[in-house]
Image 1 (cartoon, helix red, strand yellow):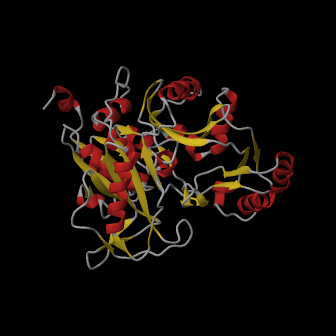
Image 2 (tube, one colour):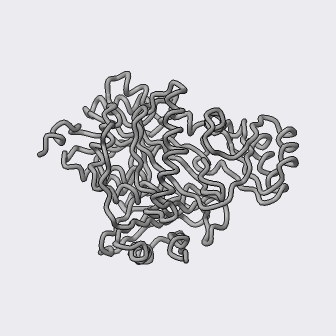
Image 3 (cartoon, helix red, strand yellow):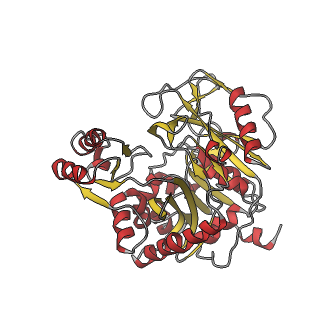
Length: 432
């Protein structure tokens, strides 16, 4: 074992139950340090790789007690809700190192209004916007700005609190739903209305430790439910990496104009941020512009980004959590990665649960199935237990080969409510 591996934690607890967490568990298990990996609450797939405990991701006291009882030396927090509830604050108080921002940093995702105010204050490129708590002023602003226009619930809404309205009528319905209809509960009691930006969208994941950071491989997500980017927004229906639309020159510009100013702005606001800053960016005709910040690994971006890292993911996250990231660089595989999300038909609205899933005996080369919304029924069968059920991820020398492998596996997986997009990666594959 290398000297570095000896210094790394021997037991790691991953918090969460989705595809992102399954990808994190797999990456941590691959560390040369060979840590014991635990997960809470996990899912049926994660339970095949790690020891799972039935402690909910929002049970802050229960998670701290679990980490203490199981002698976890490091906690990696996956979802946004426990971060915003102060899980890292509670773990730090208990003397347990954790990867993820404290509640003040998690507010960058928990409040879109808070983030917009920071972006505007520090001159970071972003769309003009108005902030509203009452229906009539919001409707007046809509008429002034016109359509298409974007309406965002301020708080956490599981990736569904954004409406891109093509007409003023759609926009008015969204405003009333959020402010008067209570569609997203307290998350929608304050809304952001911002100008619609046009261009390619990309996701930049940044591992941050104070003012130090490293940028992870660039990916591109498909948010809408239907082929050709149609239908309502979801938490993400698939993704691929690298995203060729982000050239080395463009990435350097994004770093210069968005990443470095964002990291500095967060520090200037008095936030000691140690975790993942996920920056959603629109590549507009006038340059890259920030759509949003998230404060954790993206889902499903993590499923393609982590498999491309040769760098030990445990060492990377541990260094960030301990403030030792300075001087660290990443070693990235040249292979392309593509993830297709298998969802339950009806997602993101109403969908069935409990459908039995049958997996093929053999998967294509370098293809893995990461579980997102699965459980075991009383008969011991793996069944659907969420809107996004599985993430089928493939690596290959080219994106086209990765897509072929992932889709071959998707066709072989059987489930009564199986639904997936057939065009993940098409933006890049069809680009002239």
